[in-house]
Image 1: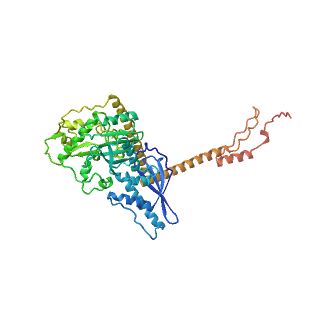
Image 2: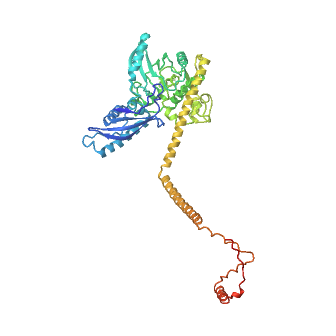
Length: 521
């Protein structure tokens, strides 16, 4: 395994959500095996590329690690005899290219640790589980109240975010979820403001926002502790899976997924809207709304409605409120960057014309879409009024951070839009129809240029002929005024010739006049 031409990238500046594209450029046969040279590109910039060299056995190991997803991947089979033939190597290369295209275009497979390390070993060479465990152990030394129950490996899609199930020594029956994560490329808050905002999250209480028990930040990472629920997330409920299973097994090829009934959609939808409205009022950017970030808990609901009360009703609250503060990109960022109209963090600010705001969805009979009426019958009946308030200084810092985050998103959208335009132009220029059209135009231009060259050569020839004519003879000396030259003979065919003969016959010297010459010699 070998990698070359890879530019050094800082850990904090690397966006793991930027898709990787891989193309097998060539293959080289050594004594006992064949190596495939793969050109990998991050994003749309052709400058951010590098090469990796992989054998078929490396591809086979990657395919084995992805079998947990349950997806039937089309992978070229092994061959013991004749695997060094040129035709077989070419056919296998085409199969491996199709395999790479599929896994790089699948959002879940492409974000897995196995694929990242296969295509970019320099940037993903660390063992993130060991690093996180070291950081957590150092924290527990300063706070002995907590202890690790077990690591929850691969329950989330983020490669640099590790989860641990912990418990408090004072309450050993209660379970909490500890997450450790590197700071992301969208972190625009200063270290001082980030620590102040994270400390503020621990005092934030709202029934539709998952509480944060403890959080701590450093120059490069953050540690967050929150309650753990065996119910899992809203996505776990839809896919009928257990929360502790690896995410590739849970979400790549669900076999028991089932949609929600209407009353559940109303119930959970109102919870989500109330949580988003609260965060928006406090000036806290979110931008990570998805079913995996909606925690379910079996507890009395703060919402009452005219809907039938059943045992399957649970409260739901928004998870990972700190993600935008820590600069972590959203899972759907590659899709958002393809849509230039989605240039804002919050979905309520994404479309400037048409869609309703959160308040309109909750309070009014908004007629933009029929589903807006789903939530009007679910009434909020909180017993105590929320006293949480973000200080004005932190609100200003959050607003500036949000503007910088959106500016980076818009810049990336602009680059992708220009790249797509250039790609379409090149594709159109390279089509067969355009090739035929260019050939016809080239022939027409060639004929026209040949005709013009002929005209120019003829004009030059005529000009050159006129310049090469012999010079005119010198003028004859002037005769005296008394001498009159004889009239020129008429050249009118036969009549002129007869006149000449008659004049010759009638010549007489008596008619000649005597002249005087003056000799100055």
